[in-house]
Length: 427
Image (cartoon, rainbow, N blue to C red):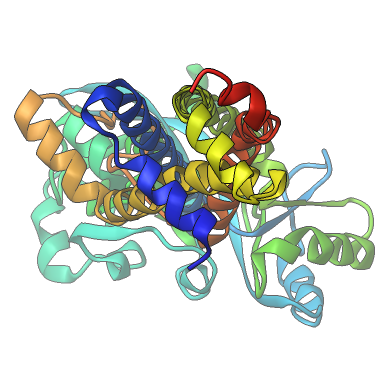
């Protein structure tokens, strides 16, 4: 062991008259520990938010959407799908209809977004989430034993799947009948009347995304076309690609192959504002929490300056015995770095442990203080997500140790400039 490291370790063990210096050293270690742990936990939660949002958005929505550019519904969608299939990177495609409407039952009326699915191909492209009640297969045809219950009502055997929050808010249960009212009007002897149709709730889904669970409803493509009197037309085509981060490149290939009047959008364009805001927030949180480490670094400077003042005579004796200025600098650099390394290691252990068990920690805190971190009706998510990115941890560790090293330079340089003759003049 180098003698500089041995002496720096001895200086960390304070004597009774140096307890104040020892307290500052402990505060420095605790400050670095707190800063590193907070950075790891917050960045893990931010990464978890981004990853969870991406997963849920790309579950309900496709990687790429193809629509017609302001020319109305798409008529020749089967031929378009055949052209898309041959493009490299395209995994699957499915037609869809997207429209807004109102849903009514005995308990009230609310606005909804209807998305019609081709049940043969849709589930190769999108994922509705968890089907809490009912069956997806009933969208095409409701079983006879169930449809017989609605014979007296005259309700058609057409199914609809709604979100869990919509069902809860409106008091709708499985196999209840609801009325869908479309803003599209049709002429009648009584004037223009909006389209209305009765449907049976054959499924209740939960995506984990409150906005989708409270506003989205699914119909089969055939029943939606019949309801809207749209003939054999669709709004567009959803596409799944093999690499979500190359969706923009694949979308451009599709656009160039299809040409006018078709228009492609990838998931990054459709959710650009949301993910840009998340990245900005992540950077800001990193900068703010880095201030904790900077405060701890100033404590290291304070502690080292006080130790240098206390150890003037020791430094003078070392220099008289042949120690160089560089060796004296090393003593105090090692001392500051020991503080930084201890704080960083403890912070990493605590930060990773909490980040990997954030769900259990959040539930424990919620049970103690009786409040919910993420109310589902306020935030996009209902659970606190976490994803530990070890690249971020490496940057945090490297940055913290660099700050600790820089904080030792001035005190150690001052210590190396002490004149032994001047320091020992009156001894």
